[in-house]
Image 1 (cartoon, rainbow, N blue to C red):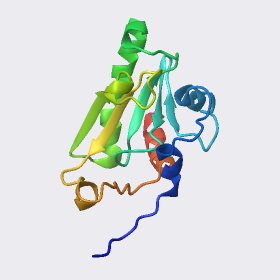
Image 2 (image 1 turned 90 degrees about the horizontal axis):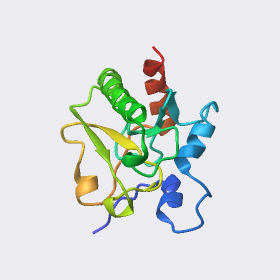
Image 3 (image 1 turned 180 degrees about the vertical axis):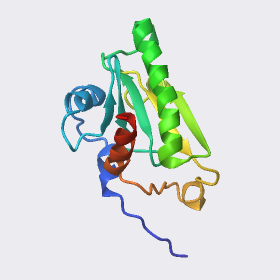
Image 4 (image 1 turned 180 degrees about the horizontal axis):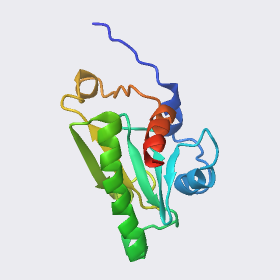
Length: 162
């Protein structure tokens, strides 16, 4: 029995255990926010919104504090408040841009909890649609994401700037 292949060479850097770029990927993203190729969709006073380079679904974003914080306990009330204010705003923006059936919202605190970036807290927001997990995910262990993260960033950025 044969099988189809879906090539996604951009994931190689994520799945290989080779040398990682030094420093924090979220801090580096914020430093490059002005670059047109940046995946940063919005910068606020205490936090920012960045597209996930390895998304679970189209429109998958992360909201992170601008300060490099390893735990919620280190965050100020203003930083924590702004994270949730941005999440509320993104809920509306995602409804307008993607019309999802639901949204997953989550924090993974620490490597054991699944945090890929364990030393800089961030809140994931993932638009979901009924039936978005299909045979590819269930049988093939592969997600097919129908949108480039830069394209998703441009859509969300346009709405967040209004």
